[in-house]
Length: 134
Image 1 (cartoon, rainbow, N blue to C red):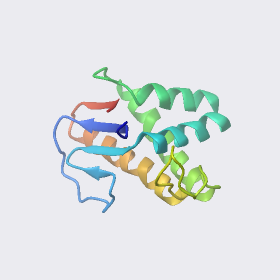
Image 2: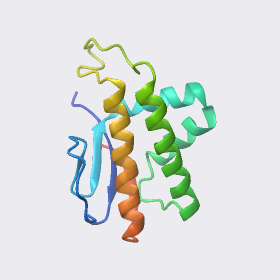
Image 3: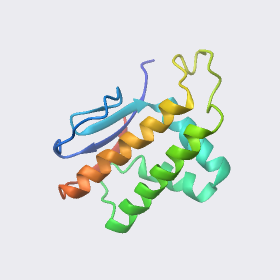
Image 4: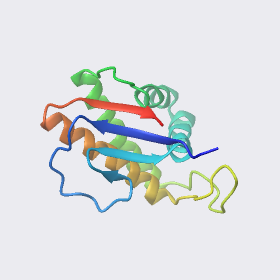
């Protein structure tokens, strides 16, 4: 079975100075699904409503978020990047069959910040923001 990915994308590639992150590139953020799920699980364990909402917006599949929802997502991404970066690891740092490449909290925070940066660029360029699992 091939690896599954969580994607967040925009219609075009709005200008970006780049974060130097392996997760960002050409109008998208792409991360291993097991890492996104670990992030959502941590958020859900602490704040169930936020976690459920993150789960919903991670599979928009062409549905549009209104401006208020985009700003809510930005707030959550920013807040949880800080919490996750300063908290305990989301997973055992030893590789397993389910998570062959475990990441430390700082890398999970970078994933959230990359999604937030993409969403900010998308809003500034008045483009469409989308998400799905591939």
